[in-house]
Each structure stands twice: as structure tokens, then as C-alpha cells.
Amino acid sequence: MTNANEEMRDKALHAPATLRNREPILSVLQKVLPTQGLLLEVAAGTGEHAAFFSQAFPRLRWQASDPDPGARESIAAHAAKAGLNLPPPLDLNVSELGWEQAIASPLDAILAINLIHISPWQATLGLLEGSQALLRTGAPLVLYGPYRRRDVPTAPSNEAFDQSLKARDPRWGLRLLEEVAREAELRDLMLEKVVEMPANNLTVVFRRS
Image (tube, rainbow, N blue to C red; front, side, top):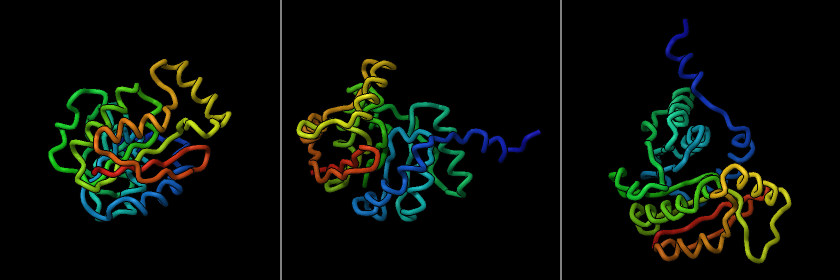
């Protein structure tokens, strides 16, 4: 018979890419995130990033979220395994109109890792609209993942990845960074920096004006 701790460990999911990308992402976050306040991680997935990053920001309250019940169980499991006192993960879907109404407090940062390309375009617009409503002036919206860029050739691996995503769901796929930035600016989110990352990914930082 398993005990509660063993049952919790069984719910902790693992994404192999997390171990490869968490250190490079953290190096950017340490430059752009506030050291304290409230951060919302959208589509936190397995919760491995939340458990790892939150330990590097002990005074920043890390609120993870994901629309998938299995992901929320995994987020809680990873937090428990790491001995972290994180808030329970929220059931949020940024594709749904008015999702931001579930967040009571103004936010000091929003983070979304590998969301933009593995979701319909409506999710990107919903994330930007919610960020406009929730972020304090000057607070960052940080996005990580692969993108297309108008004046930069797309890596063959990213082209293949884009095709595989569209085969799974025609609404998915790599987004043009300039289009994301244009939609963000329409919502008072100004592009601050684009950081080249390993494996042809980018970290994109916007600021709420």
C-alpha cells in the first residue's frame, strides 16, 4: 500500500527539455524579473520550471497555472517534492475570454514557456489581453520558445518542428515574432529585448507601459 508521499511522487511528470533549458532561461529571468511580488506562470505544464525557478526567487510569490488537471497535479507534486510552499496551481486557460478575472491581485510579472506555438492564435491574443489587464506598469511579460522572424532564416529543425505541430493541430505552429510584438504593442506591452537561446529558441521580454 502506498502512502501519500509516494502517491504524490507518482503524479510528478517530467519533460526532458526542462533539464536542458532551465539554466539558460533562469539566466535571463534573473536579469528581467523583480525580486519580490507576485508572478503568474501560464501553462506551467509539468511544474518542473516552477519548482526550479521559484527557488531562485525566494521573495517572489510564484503562482503556477495550467488548464490540464494532470499538469496541475504534477505542479503540486514537484512543489511538494522540493519542499516548496507554492500556492495551489490555478485552472486557467488563456484562450477563454475573461480568464484574467480569476486573478485577484495586480501582477508583478507573467511568464509563459512553450505556450505560443503549442496553442491556437487565440491563446496568444488572450495572454496579451490578460497581461494588459493584470500587469502593473513596468512589469514584464516573458515568453520563451521558437519563433519565425522576417529577416532571419528559420532553422531546419524549427521548420520540421512547425510541420509536426501543424500535423497534430492545424491551429498550432511557430508564430512570427513581429506579429506577436505588434499585437502586444496594441495592448500597451512594449518589446524590451529578444534573447537568443540554445536550440534555436528565443526569450522575448515585453514591459507593460
